[in-house]
Image 1 (tube, rainbow, N blue to C red):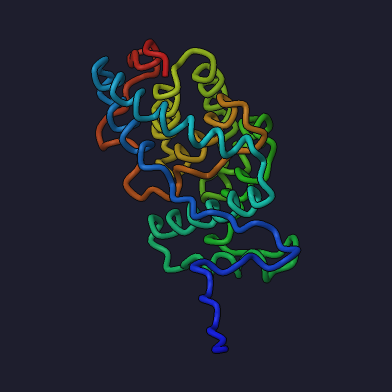
Image 2: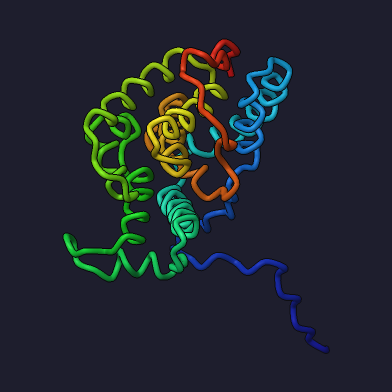
Length: 239
């Protein structure tokens, strides 16, 4: 009798005793489309954005609420991608490997450098309970990590605006409003992305935020003057 070797499986088996592999999790493209559409504050555009955003959010929400064993690694991986994009937009040369080494190969309390602090800011988003992310103290710490001079008055005003957004705006208007508020206080799109991620987590009732928006290089507000919060009626259309 001729013995033929058994064909190898198409996908390698998972080693016994190991945790399930985390799936590849690209940042959802609906976020950029939703915010760009909402900027015009046009009812037709918001309806279209709401359909796209609602479908994507439903799928993402279902995954987050399962609290998989790999969820923490997923959040930290997204935080690293967001930090790398932040460094690139700041004109720095550090890639993901350099950012990771700057934080993980130093002792607690050591100076991790400007780029390393970018990663600390996004790791804070991924590792802090969602309900504590938008306190004045938390916002002030993140602003410092992202290279902004501390301004207690601006932090207090920003925290008040975010609380107003959280209770008065629909989801699309809330995300857009976070970018607008950051730009109004001269903090830029990176801070806007961080704040929007925190607001989204609180709106959906997640225990911890997902760094979704920071890795999107073209994501944010278009250039031009930013209208006062009470002049944009995006919040009238509930997301």
